[in-house]
Length: 141
Image (cartoon, rainbow, N blue to C red; front, side, top):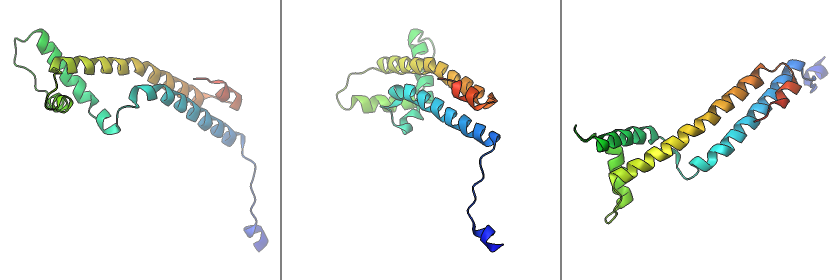
């Protein structure tokens, strides 16, 4: 019986395994389509910069609110102060308001993009709930 132990036998996949394979392939396809739509928005930004976006947006919104009604103390903007210093170098003329306007504009574009994040999540949920290979394959991004 040692020849049986040494033999490479591949059993056909079960229906459940075939469905799981089809679901995984469809989810990968959905994620690739989503990423392709996101890429133009983020391609110019290194990942390390993206990690500061929430701080940039919070500081920018606080500054712009203060700028509209400067009755209180100017908010602290350490992240944007550093960015502005780097953007302006020794002779730049960009103001903090201009930088904040640009940050908020970008943030709003990314917020709008989150509708596609929801779409991706909805489609992945539908794929996971599919009961047949045909149903999984029929779901389109």
